[in-house]
Image (tube, rainbow, N blue to C red; front, side, top):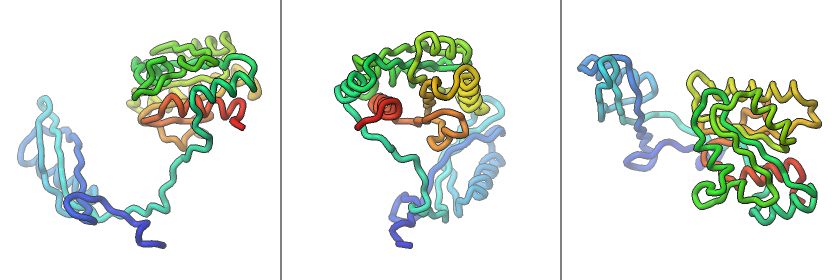
Length: 246
């Protein structure tokens, strides 16, 4: 194993292992609370934690920031990520492939499901304005895009996907309390499996900042996208998966 594969956090000097983290404890702010925060940091692996900030929240909680060295190392050769296994296409390339190989417009239905009222994620991917200077899927002339918005029930999403004969369904989840994003996504994938046989099922895609990209099989979807995903990546994946890119 090459030594260069082993890394540790960097704070003030190379290899010092310095880390800063924050957390909230359900105790009012006093000396005992600060001691509890340092004890907690020690149990997290800090060898000599320093309390750099403490602020009481309400009457019974305190927010802490601690800083100090940890002894943990990371072996880069053991890090597992989901690599992009499809080529990135420009809108022009994606449109050309859809027109040539599909012979009709490609239909995408997107929504935020459950009680999640946040549309920033689905809007960034679907709306023509896009994100960070990259236009959303509505900009692709060979795509029919239906953005259903927020708090769409799973039955309504399935019905609309069937009505529009969707080729791909995108679900964005921002609210993650009590793993709501996982529960909602599993419910959505199960509903599509019940409604359609495999050969007629649309491509199912889930996305949001708290998703693990390696969890697609567990959630019953075809692909999971995490934070910093661009519209171009989603469009390229859809085209590659449905009609190929060669």
